[in-house]
Length: 261
Image (cartoon, rainbow, N blue to C red; front, side):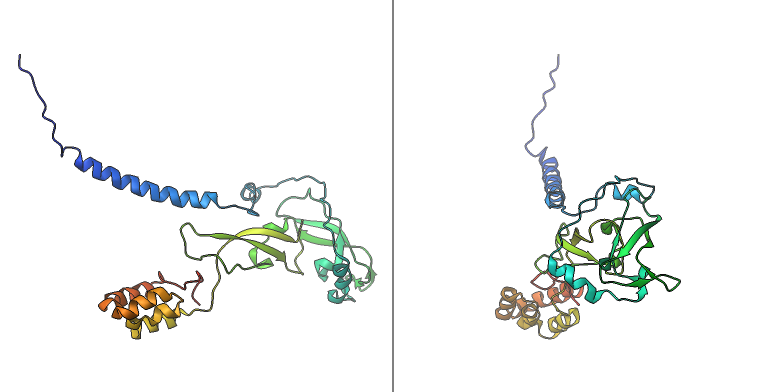
């Protein structure tokens, strides 16, 4: 009876080992990006039901949350920005008190009873002074408004280019003439999007003309790389050519993490 003997060869699994290492490295890189995004706090981000709410009516609790405390200084300052003698429906939101009901249908017009604050006088469509009037607005909370209807604070200490894209906690205030439900000041998670005043055209011009002396890197605030290019004569021209390409496509940006203008 013949016995079949298999001879073990050391290089038999070398190819599979190489492919396995490459797959593990790629998987680890993807997991780090996903983990970095998931581990960032999502304070003030829109609730998960917002997307579904836009496709159908949402009936919320009719209980009105307690109004936030207003300082005496703010209470006394509103008459200065509230025009008197105009239409009641055109008054800013800070100039009126409205009896908002939270059981309206999302995205549909709803009418609420409002009255001007003390010291504010307004008229109706007939020209008569009114103490109570009806205001028609779209049923939606303030944080559900279009971004053009509120202004948010801008952060200057986050990187605009990173993987994953970084966000920051912004404080947003609704514009005076926009009416909505809920708090007019809210938090929102926004992508880093700010500029430090660096021009892309200037950086590219410096890279082409004086890149061998590190002028482009000095302009962008990257003084270490600038010194390296200066004392190596632009990496004998190789570093200079690479920087022209990297700045041209926008891969190399300001050291403070801002965007070009």
